[in-house]
Length: 301
Image 1 (cartoon, rainbow, N blue to C red):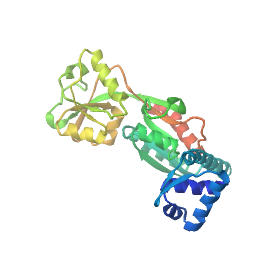
Image 2: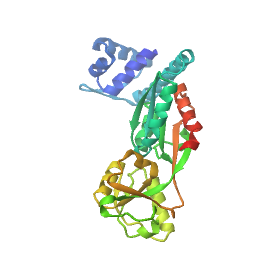
Image 3: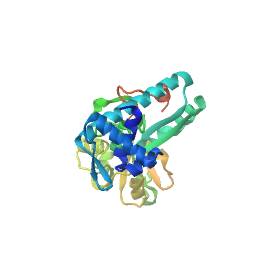
Image 4: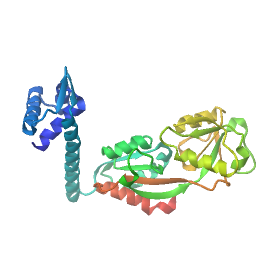
């Protein structure tokens, strides 16, 4: 059994059907069926249960899928590493980011492109769980995110570079005439104000920081809505439904025409930010240089 056959097997496992897998691989169906038969004969096992046209992995097939994915991934990474030795820094750098950290990317990407013009970028946005999956299947190499990174995987799987922390601000609608002479609010004075919390079912740490600060100051926040989307949260604020508390850098991605921001000097915590990547897995040169760029400019945030 060779790597080519493993790729054929993985395509069938992904598509669940010989015909679709053949189209994906751009080969004819009969040769692909023969290759699968050869693999099963060599191993002496049945890899798929056939239910009409649909094929599902047997227990043996599931084990082979995991092993084959690891072998193909390692081979791809080895090929990339060898090519980089000869060709230098080029190709596509794939990055993931939570929406609240997207504002950190444009300036860095522009600077990086000036230095390494042969590098292109792919950027995927999602929550911690989705980005954790992207890291594991190597759809991306790096994640720019709020910390801690709340993926479904053990935190010991990751290396990280901690970036400067981000202060929290309160976001209020302009049309409700919140304007005041000071540039700040006290969190404790907002005990009865309707609050829209940025929170999802699986990412809760950011919201817990705010809730714990309210409790430290002696009150329970008046949370009237929990929302997993920053954009929707801001839209609700503009509509006058409530106010929200967010890391300050998040708001650089929005027009300030309909909202106002105020500091919260009595909050003793900040939002932690960092870059995450998989430990003990090969990082391309371009990914290494991108991390170094963030590290060298930490003081300029």
